[in-house]
Every structure is written in structure tokens, then in C-alpha cells.
Image (cartoon, one colour):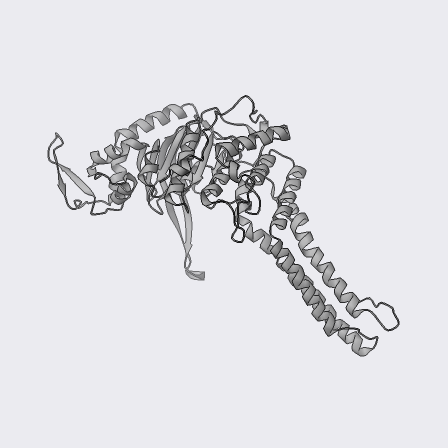
Length: 508
């Protein structure tokens, strides 16, 4: 079913090829060729407020509890039911959670994460926030222009962009618009690969993805995971959260981290997870999807086959329902893992990695930028102007409405006289003129609301400063869209109302 999709991808080249220089700027300090990410005693709590006014109560909710593990080069999946904490753990590892309420350490090759970790690592959000009015190549050019150092020439940046396009199999749609709800664009899988490509521009050793299969059909989702598998084989550490993958996707996993209610149910090689659950007393039936089986066990599904070992030799028989337990099922599974050989092995490896590391992680420090304010301003203005040209309907509609409104007001107050009635009518015209100018400017807030998710993602990833984004939007969107209609409206009003019988113009 997915064979047609698989043929699209071109085998990936090795990282650090000789013809493509790697980023060497001090501001974009990269990791070693293979990055091992380890997390030690991660606990995360948030304060939840409920109630109204005087009856409001603040309760501290525990999201993650004593999470330990190691993510090596390969496909590292974080699996679990909805609300289990997998997205929270992913954000903690990627240094994208508020440090308040967070405790524990995240190390890279046994050392604390650098202050610019968020800028150097790749993070693909679930909603694929890319500029839909631009082409695939233009989106990649924007990422390269702002995230790669200015010491790299334009030719070197274009070579890297072409390599990413080739690796992701986007050659045929490289010059096609990504698409919006009003513009027909690329497919869902190609849009997802474009989002991945924007993060691969910096050639990160660690790539985070938040549920990369969301919104994709089974064949496209399988093709995306095959792409990630090829990337992981080149030495990248790929960490992603996923809800309920099918078996063809599950068998691609190298490491599996199973979470439920913020607690660790299993962490280790993905292909050994079934054997681990069998030791615990749960047997996966033939032809059953392992991912579905794990979730059924955690949720206490009575259809899961439970093994009751009768003696030390491991003789077992099947029962139709799980036995009743004195403690909640999730706590029992978490306790079983805490005492398992997998947990002991992980702790031993964590102790070796963290040995001698006393320094606190500084990943939540100030964001560093690869380019200057003026460079960021130029590219943000350029992209915003292209976005404006890519949506001509909105700008044309606004100009047409402005012309119609000007003609209507001009027809109502046409040819004012220099008498008491004319003075009173001029006051009415000034009211309409002022009201139109004020309320038409209020709609400018929509520009920032529509691009809120895009701005948050790009700002956290170190694309640009807040000031660069604001002034870039001001120059490319606000001034043309607010100044031009105002000039047109004022000119129509002036010439329809101000011309007198003595051929003189009266200024309002």
C-alpha cells in the first residue's frame, strides 16, 4: 500500500559531506557527530486554578513523575494514551517547557545542554506551521537565511537547501506553494516533510517531532516514518511522541518509552517490549498490534490475555479477565518496571553518563541568533510582502470596499457650500472620515493573531528577534494595507466634496 510513497524518497547522503560546509559559527555551536540525550529524575508539576472569584482554588498537578532514560541515535518513540504526558516529556527534553515546576537534569553526551540548545536542535510541531502562501523552496530559503551564519555564502546555502529537498523527496513540488485553506497546495505528507526540512537546514544532531503522523492517512504516515528511519541511520537522534501507530510503523522503532499518567511504564529497546510484558503476565495475541496491546494493558482492557504462572518453571494458563489488584493497575506496572532489569540497566548507564557532572543545565538561557537585526528585518519584510502578494483577494477586497465607501459618502455630501449648512455637513464628513480610519486600523491586529503559532515556533527556535518581526510586519503589511486605502479614501472624499462654484478647493 505504501510502496508508491516509498519510491519518492531518495537515499540520504552522509552527514558532513565534503562539498557542503557545516556551520562553524560560535553562535551556532553544534553537537558531536552522534548525540546521546539522557534525562535524570525528571519531575514536572503545574499549578491549576479552578473556581470563580473568591472561591478559586489552586491545585498543583503532577504531570511527570521520576522519569529516567537515554535516547541514542535512532528512532526513539514516546508512546502512551492521551493525557499520559508524552508531549510534556518531549517538550521538557527539547527545553521548551517553562522551568517553573520542573526538576531534574537533561544531558547531551553527559554534559549539560548549552544555552542555545533550542536553536541548534530541530523541533517539528504537530500542526506543521509553515507559510502556506510561499513555495516549499522559499520556506527553506527563509529558514536558511535566518538560521545559518552570515559567514556562509548564498551559494553554500542554496547547495544545502537543494540537498535537503533531495533527501526529503520534494523535488517535484519544490516550486509549488505549500497551500492554505484558500490556496490549493501540496499534500499532507509533503507539507509534513517541508516542516521537517526547515529544521534540517541547520543539520541538527537531535530532531524532536510532536506526533508526526497526526492528520495523515496510514500510507502517508508510514512514508514519513520511513523517511525518519533513513535519517536516523545517518547518525541523528530522532525523538518523537506518537499515540497509536500501526505495526508497520512500530517495527521501525529502535527505542520505546511508554508513559501513562506521567509515570514510566517501560523504557528500552522497542523489540523487547513484548517479552517484558509477557514476564509481567500479559501475553500479546498473534496478529495483534503491539502498540494497541500496550495501551489495552495500561487501560485495563479485560480482553487482554493474562498469564497466571503456577510454579517457578513458568507454566501458564489463560484466563478471561485480569485478576483483581489491591493497588491501581498503572502504579503496579510502574512499580514492576522500577524493579526490572531494564530499569537497573538504564540507571547504571545514567550514572556513568552523569559522573562528574555537577553543573546545572543552562538550556533555558537567553536565545542566541545567527544573524543581525537588519538581516532579520529584511527577510521578514520580504516574506511578509510575498505573503501579501500571495493573498491578493484580501488586499483587493479591502481597496474595493474603500472605494465604494468613499463614493457613497461623497455622493451623500456632494458639492458642499460655504454656508452654515455646509459647515454642519463638513462635521459629519469628518466624523465618517475619522471613524473609517480608526476602525480600519483595528483590523491590523488580525495579522499577528493569524500568525501567532508560526511566530511562537520560529521565535523559540531562534529565527529572529521580537523587534525584527514587529518592524518587518509594520513595513511590509501594515503600511501598504493601511496607508494605501486611507489615501484612496481621502482623495475620493476631497475631490467630491471640496470643489466649489468659484473653482476653488476648500480644505476640510
